[in-house]
Image (cartoon, rainbow, N blue to C red):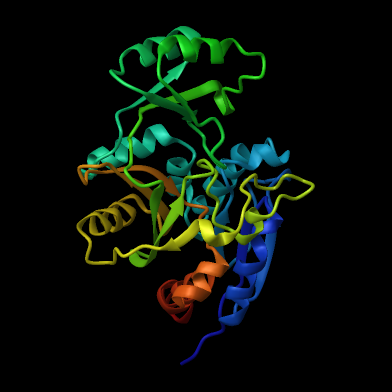
Length: 321
């Protein structure tokens, strides 16, 4: 017996990323309810609306003026899960995306190589961490997004001068990640897209213009609202030759399944000796429409198909009982 598709409630804070997602969901027959999370009211005594919930809140939300989105989303997701709502990229997955420190711990737990990583808060601790690196190192915000806070340093003294600059931004919570710098023979990183424990595709992202590598088409054009700072054409993204049989891809898929991350774009870099270092897990992943047309994969529609073919049966079977 066929059942009507449940409504999908989409938690979001960046409307520029919505059109491809909404188009993909509606193309598979879903009714979509957009739920902005840049303020709002939650009553713990009242149950949330029925349906599926998709979390699309980004760690970079504060850069778009939505300073309360991350903290409100934490409470929102707990509320949803407390009432038994089905959430895609729920609270556990969200906490991974909000912390590069936790991501590194997860990578270690699954025996996936990553750059040496330290978390530091405060000037003295940051400089102490920097002094422990034998060579060049980079800094980044623990709650990352848009490549903000990523800087390369050759010495502790250079970092000290950076920290003393009045425009230095320590990021949310003033938590700074320091990582060993991995020198790649070619200027690109590889991003592996995973949906529902399955390999979707992999792409190369050129680092010639820096590490602001948001793949969304909306991020490729500078807007008046500075939605995403990446610029230049979509030629910065190209297909990667790796596929689902790649040993690292298999490990990354196993990580997402074990950690409850249903939608992810995971990035790694390869050094001159062929060693791979994974360093970023993006739950609020976006897809390049231009690359998608080139390789014949519509990422958001594949996500919608996952919800329809895998998640919906779980919901409708329970409804039929």
